[in-house]
Length: 124
Image 1 (cartoon, helix red, strand yellow):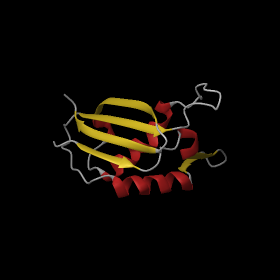
Image 2 (cartoon, rainbow, N blue to C red):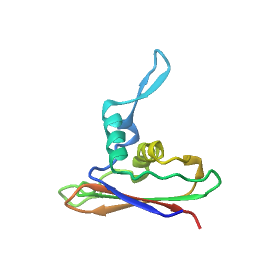
Image 3 (cartoon, helix red, strand yellow):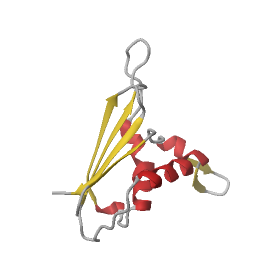
């Protein structure tokens, strides 16, 4: 499998921003912002077909200037909380299954420009 790498001009939404819960009906559903983010990922993610038994590695770099307060203290933004919607969106475009992920890595990068770099490759 040839690895793919692409850049999304936005950082992912957190789990809390991605889903709404209707307690009365006992339903969970995507927010409008989450649906828009998934469309954006589909625009930038190249098509890929992955064989069912292929083990995959998923890497994401989240670039932003929001990791620190004005005073220089670290903000409580959990990068692992940003992965769920992104992985679902990528596998909505890639013909494979996220159960094939054997290696998932995240990295926060301090940058004036906000974007997310995604790399999907065969796990070795």
